[in-house]
Length: 314
Image (cartoon, rainbow, N blue to C red; front, side):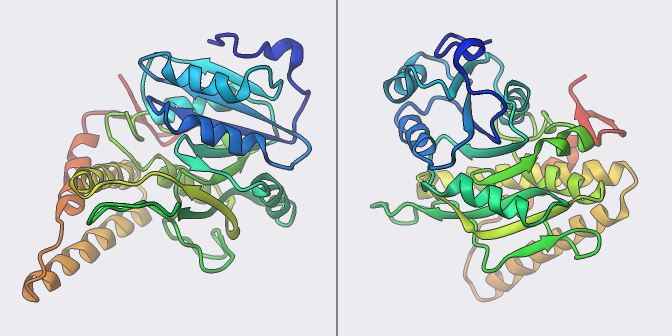
């Protein structure tokens, strides 16, 4: 429900071209910079919807500090955790024909929205866009990692152009019509959900299977201020594996043999890498590979809506 950060019904701009959605949970130290950077964009017609799943008021207070009274901003607090659930809530509460998503630990360049709109205008058949994610320069401990996404050149993924699994939730955008075509995010997948991650890969795959195009644009850049310390990385890799295993196997259970091929290829690649490192006595992490098998197994705890290609909670 709206908590009154702004009175959306009275003051929000009508029919913005782009709606930005930021989902946040207990990141009061980061969310202010993320919101401030989006509001500094030079696009003439956008609004910002914030979905807050935090346990305390600290996140809301940080948002108020930078956005109080700004008619472009709408704030909603929801009690149930889960990134996919928050995404779906943001889609429902926003109005733009384009929806741009970023995370609460990211900083958007001032031309971020303008470049997204230009990319979609240049490809009227494209329904989903992923941009580059670069790391914010920080002083990190040994082994610390900031997740990023490199896109060396512009690409188009579709049934005609070919497909590969790629994307990162820190920087993507979609036409609103896509969600009418394929439905919302799978709420069993994704951070805070039972199957941990891969909601973005799943959406991209459902987009591809529905016959829509995905565009990759290196000029659409987002700065990620989300460093993971070395001791946290094994758990992150395991969660990635669980989500991937559950995402692929869900589509296999729906009779999709291409998803089976992608799953087998992923297992083969990571098994081969592990064997090579073992032979070279360069011990590498196995958490991602083991996570895939856990995700396949745990996916069977849930039924599937075969029409929407989404897990069901009960």
